Image (cartoon, rainbow, N blue to C red; front, side, top):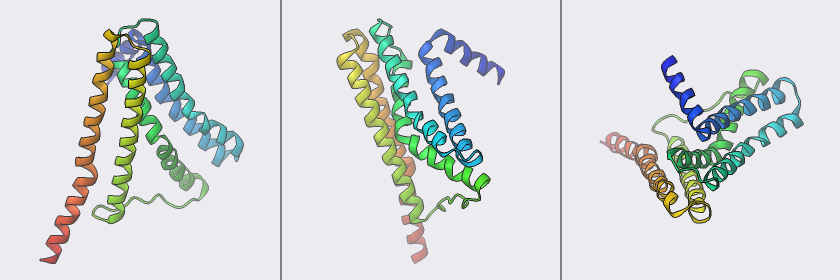
Length: 198
């Protein structure tokens, strides 16, 4: 475990964009935690709203940093594409992560209802998986737009190939998620229904 941490620290030292991605991820959870503590434990609703509203600013910081790095002539690497992928998934899944944490925090500390997880094989579960997949599509669209914008307006022709490569990869993830998520669940439900009829 310590070796993995050392590798991650060294990677962050060697590449500021990696460090920024890690900082944004840590920042998301810190702001989320502080926002929920302010809301439910300290009863400071305005402060809570401000803290939670600050979460998307982390994404803005990341986009600006990647843009400036490329404008300075940095050689495009996998981390530049990874930053765009992180941005897409952060924007698409951010609100649902906040809702997920809010329900659990409210249940534990404010007497809120327990979180409900749709049972496997139910129509609610299938609908939940389709909603998740829609978020993945939104993440892929955001990633593609950001990378496309970097290719068209920021990157040199030599830089654009590495960035364009990520666009195809993120859509591969969309396809895998579709098959392994909602289509798998839908197929399983159909097989169970057929078996029940027999």
